[in-house]
Length: 113
Length: 113
Image (cartoon, rainbow over all chains, first blue to last red; front, side, top):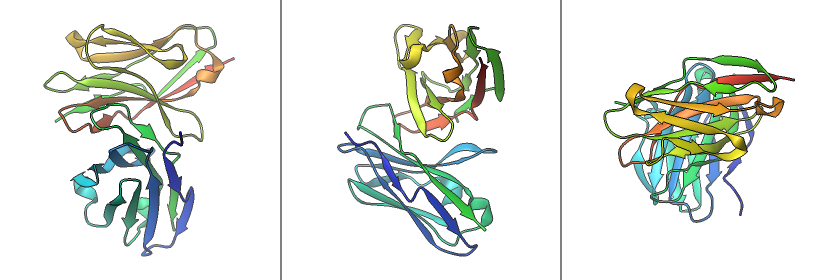
């Protein structure tokens, strides 16, 4: 079984650009999570989908971050416009409905100049 | 509100010693507790979880954790430690019914051969 896949693995953007990160969850998983990981803040939840419905949009991240789940096997995270403080690793995770264990993708390392 | 505290940012020990990584949590009801590990350059991997039942739970790679309700802790243990255990370890809590994880800031473990 393929695990969670994320593309691209690395992204460099200029301040003000729009970037789109992609995630494919484990086949059959219904829950999908987007996290941001930084050394200072650790892991922060950005968005959470259940069966393609947005359950949580991460509060403080609402204004420039938008996650979508176009179908059950594909999700995107758009950051518009990017700022240098968005430099981080963005992780996608998925899990089976009513199961607790989340499976993480390899992450996308974003650098905003 | 729920929170997870990992008070030790960095732990160093020699190979063969016993390791114990501390985790405390704050949550008003019965928590689900997890440990994840992140090896250098890799994403998070599930180690073990406590849902209910026996206070000591065993996970992968020879790790175990003990849930102590009396002091709201969920410490990770392994004996003996191996140099390959060097990684960052994250404790996480799931509270409520939305399957969302709240992570601690992580503990970077260095095991010296």
